[in-house]
Length: 51
Image 1 (cartoon, rainbow, N blue to C red):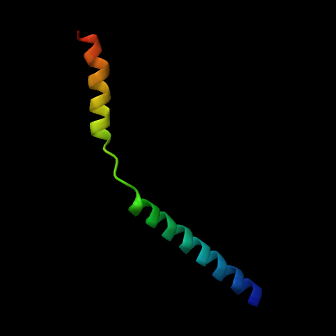
Image 2 (image 1 turned 180 degrees about the vertical axis):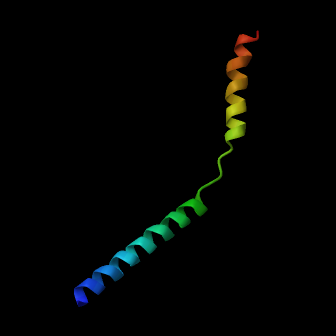
Image 3 (image 1 turned 180 degrees about the horizontal axis):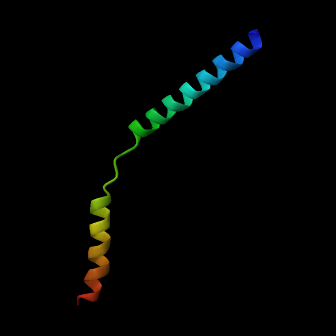
């Protein structure tokens, strides 16, 4: 009975830890500017064909 409760507590703690780690990792990530990178790459590629 005690081992079962200990296992449940450990699993819940592990799930909470993983969720908290995901939240911290997402918050510390720098925002990426996909629109700027996409338009810059298209401009250089398409600009070569326009000449």
